[in-house]
Image 1 (cartoon, rainbow over the protein chains, first blue to last red):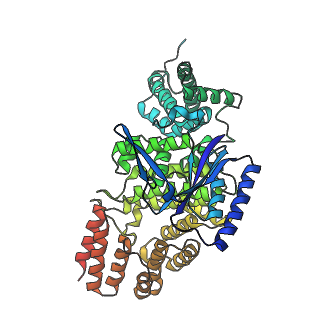
Image 2: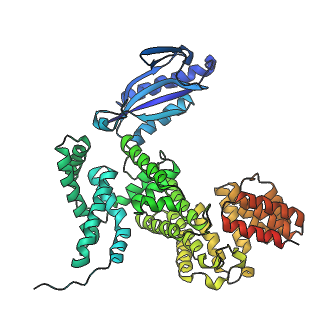
Image 3: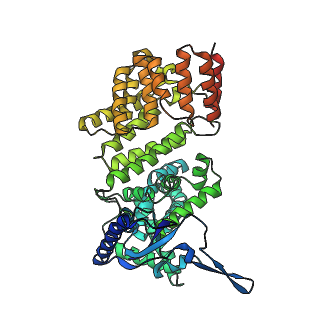
Length: 123
Length: 412
């Protein structure tokens, strides 16, 4: 099994009104249950607005603090799900379901797991 | 007693290489689950083959020899590396052991190349990466050859290949023929890659030569391979027929100086009758199945052209009907533009021009070239000249540009 991070890219700003959001959240919860029943779900979470983020950066010997997200932009990661799947095709199938429910772009990215650690980017 | 075996020329080994490289790599990818290990092993085996076969002659099954040698070499090498705590080597060895119980590699039932084609043309890879991987792994072209064919610096192409192979490994893109539900979409991607290679060879998008024959030959070879692997897919047959019929006109479509000759002006005695016969018989086989698709219809259109002994004898009415069918299946501006050319022959240039003017296609040089030709036939020389200028400004191919400039000057 291989783990994949499904990142949800969300436009900044106010969320849609409740009559739009509620059915989406219902479908999202149902998809979460489906993932758990299939043994695919590992972890998931929704994030507060990008404005709540704080970036720490080492400069010389000091760690500088800046307010706001690392990347400027009109879209940021609004939430994520980690799943385990046998291969990319299977992960993409779950990502496709997520994209349909949320109508937002989903980025599917493999985790550098134990089995392929020697190839993981070194920080 | 030892029999004297005649020396095998290097060209003969080269032929085996072109024919068997893809098969060997595909089998080794299954054995080791890793493209780099497979490629390296197969290249090793061919290096050994070049030395050995020259004096001992070709073995009974060159492909079997290459595959066995490559596997043994790779296992030896991986054992050495596995003892040095190399995780990859261990994983590959483990994979190879688990495959040992499976039947011999050259079974006719399942060809590993089919799986590998679908991996190379996986939609998670960019088109450029799909093309490069297919030519590299199935076609056996070197990185330098692919870079040259697509006019990309070699390090750029090498980087593209490394990145694509890394993604296949790290994201675990499977080596698998897609199931029935996904097959139509996935097959479309494979056919698009092969046709892109062919078209790049047929009308080089830039550079100073109109045709790069190597790419056409390679695309046709891949088309034949896929037809052999998927005989039940009419669009696969349709694509092969389309390429063969297009290729049949190669000798006639350029002047001795390398400039293009329009279909209407081609010397039809120079068309390759053998390719036409093969292409037409494939088209007939497709028609009998009655599951039309865009490649089959385009092949049928080309088959109608190939039937006409002279331009004037072309059955334009039938071609227009085929374009109607194609436009219904694939309503793209390119199809609409090509259909307009047929309309010009059946209903006249004025009707065609009103269709062409309804297309928003400013960036495409052929749009302007076709408009220019229609305007010329309607004796609207000033507008035709403008349209030729627009076409000239939009082509990067030097011979095409020269051709368009000549047409522009011929206007009265």
